[in-house]
Length: 247
Image 1: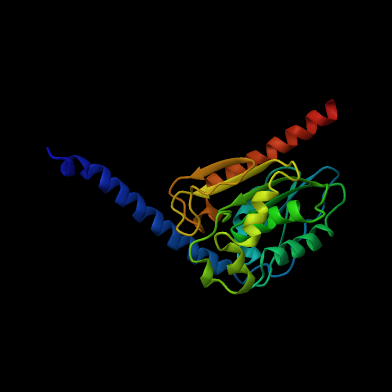
Image 2 (image 1 turned 180 degrees about the vertical axis):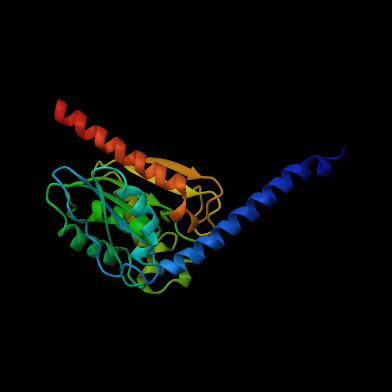
């Protein structure tokens, strides 16, 4: 049997994986479009208690806070866990999104533990907020999903500052790498190995990193594995808080 024949099963499986991932991404894009009209105003939690967790979800460009509805429902089922979100204009860049984020955080309970979760451009804004602004002492961790820390393919197609900031080598991306270790916060980067916009090999200087199999850029928003990683990260920070109180 020649090498080509021997490789056929591998090539078939690879092709099948690519097809499955493309089909999931198409479904995710359609779902994202259906959620676009939702949650245009700031969504703030009700009935939080002292020490409760509030997960603030920051969407990507050309989307709305509605993109996080499935994840919000999943996280809200966890005891003493609440969610918040907001929608920013499509041309908004990283600094602008971080400014919107700061205004939302001002409206959250002063005794809450805050977890920042951002998708794509929203992930860059989350890190910009903790690294390049006065931040907020209530923030206990950051989680980014498909954040283009090394640039996004086709960034030039996006309007205004958003496209500029996501371009490989932009001033924002260079600055985020320089100041990545400030402050010293737990961080988790999540990528998809079928993402055609943000390479799964993308790295960030600090924190942990996971790659979700057969997941594209938008499919990550609705992927159960992503929800599980976020839930585990919340549990880990809750455990840290318990240890801190006991010592």
